[in-house]
Image (cartoon, rainbow, N blue to C red; front, side, top):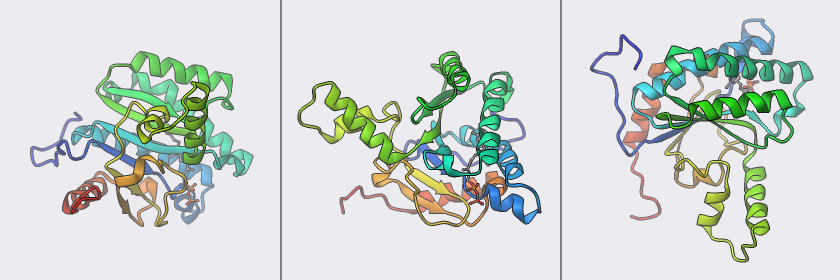
Length: 237
Ligand code: FPP
């Protein structure tokens, strides 16, 4: 736990094990400051580290972030390159980061189109962090429809003739994680944008106008309080 956290700090219980974030608003954050969009991603990447650390501090066991979608390749090449560079820098630095020693890194998404170098870095960090306490799923070249299609095809390839919901869950990129309890989207849009569509079946959704680079620890706590104020019935009464 990072220092200077008081005993009044919020703590979650077993009802809230997994929070997922759609980190939206980096581009607008930068444009409002007359800066290039890439700068927004840079500040967004720094904020991502802070938010993940805070999630660990309040007792969350699994965090998932939407870093790059299957659709994001259509952005200007300069922006795509900047995001990939940030990911590489992150992968290179995270092992030496004293605040990240309890993180188990998992990358979810289709890796086949990533550069060999990036894949090697991902494999390495997944391997050395295995067995750690806080699971961080980084969605990279991720799309939920793509994930479901991939899952069904891998079941068919295994010779499964009749597919159950459990079969699909176990063949998704997130098979190792429980479904998200809470999905937080920053940046004011009210949609899931092809993120964790299967896993979100019973997730509570929380939308905020705050742009991702500005999302503070207090904002995360606010989302958590909203989660606890809701009644989850899972289809029951
Ligand atoms: C959405 O904001 C954000 C992204 C598509 C990229 C998210 C990437 C990062 C936070 C940095 C890299 C991540 C890691 C894990 C190191 P947007 O650009 O769509 O914002 P806008 O809606 O204001 O245009």
